[in-house]
Amino acid sequence: MAKKAAEKDSKKDKKKEEKKTKPAKEEKKTKAAKEDKKKDKKEKLVKKEAKEEKKKKKEEEEPEKTLEEQLEEELTDEEIENFQIDKVDMEKLTNRVCLFLANYDDGIVQSELWKKFKLTSRDGSRLALKLERMGIITREKILENKRWTYVLKIKKTPVSTDSIENAPCLVCPVEQKCSLDGEVSPRTCQWIEEWSINELSKPKKKKEQ
Image (spheres, one colour):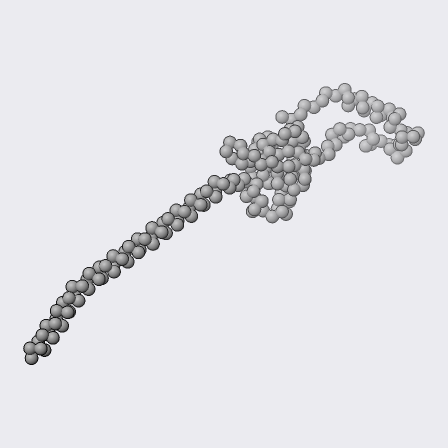
């Protein structure tokens, strides 16, 4: 009887001990879980900061994209080559731009050119891309006032008919009979002589600035 009572007391003591140690174990477990969570959070934060730093460094190393580069990504070759400005004679505009550029051996910053022809940056940039595709101009990327832009240089000047628009040959009634050794010849043509003298006596046009 006494043995049973002792075993019973022993079980009770064991249960009491378990009750005492259980909260301590749970507390230790919870504390460890919190530590692990805190550690994971710190590692994620370090990784995020490293990623952001890498991204920032990459952005600093890569030059800022110009409007033309953005347009080249957005537009197809066909859209650039067929670019038109509403109510504008594109052939005439192209000739004017190219003749203007011909005055600048070292080229001109495109923003100055667009101001001269009263074009928006977007229209001017598209026109520059179009002229480059046509092989009429070249674009040289430069850094100006901490921003990337382009210097435009003439590559091929469009043919101008200004110098011969009043030439008598264009409306000559005997043009079919004219030849160097013929009865009618540019060497002896009075009309050509008069026209040449008249053209030489005209004041030269000033270049656009």
